[in-house]
Structure formats: C-alpha cells, structure tokens
Amino acid sequence: MSQKKHPSPPEIITCEVVAKSKLFTIESLDLQFSNGENRTYERVRGGGRGAVMVIPITADNELLLVREYCAGTHNYQLGFPKGLIDPGEAPIEAGNRELKEEVGMGAKQFSDLKTLSLVPSYFNAKMHILVAQDLYSESLEGDEPEELVVVKWPLDEWQSLLTQSDFTEARSVAALLLLQQFLASEA
Image (cartoon, rainbow, N blue to C red):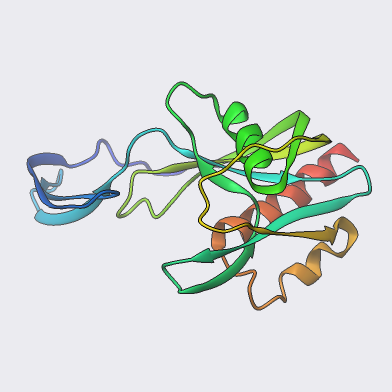
C-alpha cells in the first residue's frame, strides 16, 4: 500500500519553556510548515527514558493485573503492571523489575509486542508493551504509596475485561488487544 508522506517536519523557529514541575516541562514551539503556515504548539517534554507495560501470563493461563490509584481520574483503575524505565535499563529489565515490584513475580521469558506512542500531538513518550511468561515468585520493594491489589483474570475470558468499568486505560486496552494478535500468531 502506497501512502503519501510529508517531506519533513515543520521548522522549529523558537522553543521556550513555559511551565515546569517536578514531573513535567511544558514547551511552547513556534513552527513554520513547508507551505509557509506558522503556528504555535505546546508540548510536554518527555524524559526520554520511556516506559514499559507488562502482560504477565501464569502457568494456569491467567492474566495478572493490578488495581491502583490514578490521580488523573481520582479513582482506582484495573490494568497491567507498568512503570518508567530507569536510567541504564533495557525495556525487558525494566519490565521484570516492575513485575517484581507490582505483582511479586519475575519472568524468565519476555516477548516484545509493540512500542506505542502516548499522545504524540502533545507528548514525546514511548511505552514498550511486553508479554511475560514462565513466571516465578520474587518480590522487590516498589515506590507505590500503598500495596497494589493483584487481580487474576482467566486468559480465555479476556473479552470480559473490556466490559469492566475500571478497565478503561487505553494503554491496557491496546495491550490486551495486541496480546490476542500475538497469541493467535503463536497458535
């Protein structure tokens, strides 16, 4: 399939930091597009390390999810273990660490499903979606303010996860659907 591509991104005329917090830096960009059009965009500058989301599958064909507090929606959400990649870590190392911190399990086998962009219009951040199999018991202390609730979900009932009122995070939904494609290709 042939697709028309733009020749190059617009030219950044100026880039100015307009706000900064402990977690975020917001930049204002004055841009000039190839057709001469000028616009101002704002973006959140990412840290560049990226993040991981892990889909753990037990030997009993259960998915392991966590229910944790989300400040953005001020409620608890059900989703897959996730977190930032620490400096010097590869995505699989970060995934195994997050798995140990959040569900008390490590994995001997990882499969890389896809790297997703998160809100690319406003944020330069990537999340690596990994499948973890051949799990073993091992815990690490995490940075969560409270213990996360680990939820086991039968893999063959994956579609019912989509009907859960607290399973709404787009990254977890995308990961679940990518998992189905991965499992179908393995069969």
